[in-house]
Image (cartoon, rainbow, N blue to C red; front, side):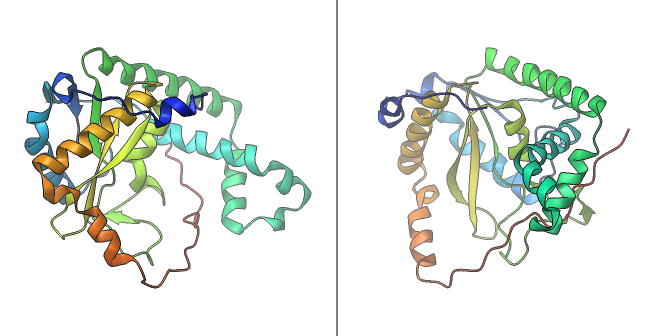
Length: 258
């Protein structure tokens, strides 16, 4: 959900006292797939940064049937984006885009009504956490970075995932609730690869979140200098061959059923 922001406000930094902030954190929003390694890293990062905040509490979230809800909302976006092209010449779309479009086209009014109602329920439950907290923290991704030749994660620790985007649940859950979120570099994981923490602000609190993120980056650089070595990592990557990336839309999603 987009809304107008004053460009001047976006670019104008405002100091934030992290010591006044009440933080909630989670490894997985109670149901997202997350590896044991990333869970360990997240717990270690929270333990190391909790002194920066007024409080830092592990919180249980209830995202209901967020995966099926996102399946339906996502399929609807394919209808909105590709209907004209599909109606005029379906072959002009790639096979996988067509498959996602047709999945949405075959949904019923009942599917759509349920998804909108479920998204509303999830939204209200999530916003209630901001009565007692100012921020929510989670991992950004559920696994250590993997080779770019693998377009998506098909399984996690031996268990198959629902579809090709299920591994992104930590972030698409936040897309469902429409709160602003930003990923901050937060050191490295157990493989020496970059680790990011997802920082989620209040609904329509975009400017506040940007200011908090700046304050957190400054605090990390002061209190945990090793967390702020992402510039050195980027320098090492510069000059390497640029891969010919492909879309991750490789398969139609598989909807869960009741």
